[in-house]
Image (cartoon, rainbow over all chains, first blue to last red; front, side, top):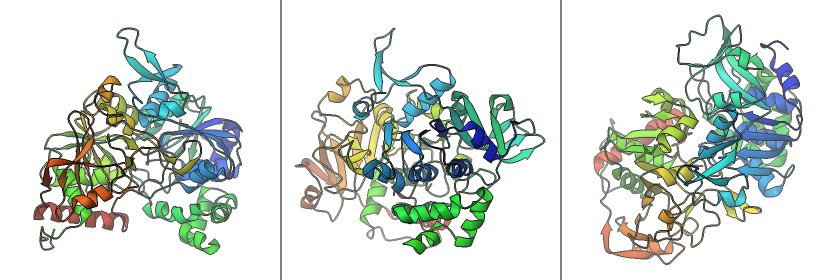
Length: 292
Length: 268
């Protein structure tokens, strides 16, 4: 497979049933287009990893593709709950979701440890919290030098990491800027990686210390303009806050959710098709009301 | 700012909570800010009495000076107005764990009498009645900031005798339990609500009502608390918001509503 390749082929050959997959993004640059492609291709029994699972994880979970979620904060930012995630945890629908829960500091360190090829992450963390009582993967070790008790958690080593970025050049070198979250660490911690980008250019024009992921360290680079929508891509488009608000009523009902996903994702060919249908239905709210 | 300056006698419970919380932040303080009410109070401080307050958000912006309140923790405005934007691992490793944060400013779904915080679950963890979003950055912010402010509305649902889950530690079982557990930061110094301000007793660390907002009765505060709330013998009345702070807050919220299309950047 060529490094610069269509998203459909990248997901088809790099994401496998049963994989541990991280689609990362901290509010900014969330790889929605790639998430939709995973849903269209009906990838199964995934373990999803993400610090801040939001709408795209709500969708993959609600469609039944997820066995386990490793995370540190799951919500619809600025709006409220992820109803499909909650229904899977509280109601076991459409299947029971196993959860492994951390703090942000724990997850961030676990990605760094994964990228550093270490078996576990070490941090001052979790002290006094009940999280270690419910998550056997949070343990404590003694500093060999001072005897201090420190938290240890396994590295995150995804089979595949998927991120969205602003630009790639024709050799597949990728530039991202703005709020970076853990994207670089997540890519370098993974066995395989897919990066969707807003545009492919002749010259990245990146200053020397910019966050550039060299093409040779990536598995696939896919040209998906608008691929972070409804999140944002700094320098390209703003976050569609209305979509996040309108998602709430759609995700509240199982039937409404399924109908919306069929119409907007399963029955569309690709992300451009999703955007076209979305424009026709004037956002998720309109579609949700039809089935309410 | 073109509107008439509001009368300082005319304010809502949420407004006095926000203004009282913002007053606790001093100029030059380095503050790790949670989204929602903490972010509103911290930005109000920056726009009024504390222009040099340094606001750090867990998504990476350091020294953020947003023009409108962020709807999410990673809004682009935070990045564009910051002194620098670093990765999320760097924020937690170098800046928080590195001991550079004066104040952690947090919200909460529930607190108990020792200012422990729950943002994880209502009911049993394995069979939740309500699954909340989870920890986010709070456990380490609560543990490692030199001091912690918590802002939330006061009610029996939120101020509970026993938390179903401690997500982030306050003073655990009280007394010196926090120190004995080896938690480095000083812990909560104030819980600011829409009814008053609670501060931990210096010895027992039990939250005590030390300031009550004007127009609120002690019975009202007790009624909104799920344990037998201690009242300070030196109970003060919270200073009413000054007109300039109220004007700045309303202006900020109006700007925010215009930018986000009605939402005032609150929590869900």
